[in-house]
Amino acid sequence: MRRRAIGALAVTMTAGLLALGGPAVGSADAAAAACAGVRVKTYGFATGEVRVYKSRQYVCAQTVAKRAGVRQKMRVSVQARGSRAAVDSGTYTRHAGPVTVYALNRCVRVEGSVGGKSTASGWILC
Image 1: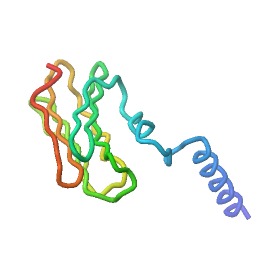
Image 2: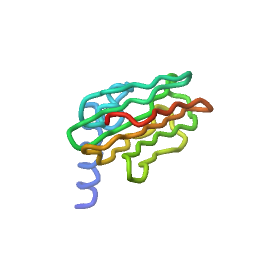
Image 3: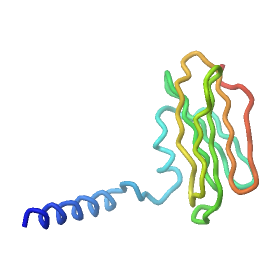
């Protein structure tokens, strides 16, 4: 009896989260809200764009496809100078990332791709 009550509670909570715009929010802008901070740069290219966000200590990046809903290879990378890059790549329908690095007083470099098209920045936010 206890298992059945816990299962019903889990289903009710999941339905409530989805109704309030939980993990399955339908717009790319809402998905981009996963990055903390203020959007400081946007690098557009033929099949999407890379959005760069900065808070005091961190830089976050996310690649967003122009044609959401189509499964395609996507990649996003952000690297603080002197550190390894944080990377998210795979086959997604909407966006790759977000990826975040600690970048207090350091330049960063971002890269992103959707399908066969890509973009990359030089060292920015120095």
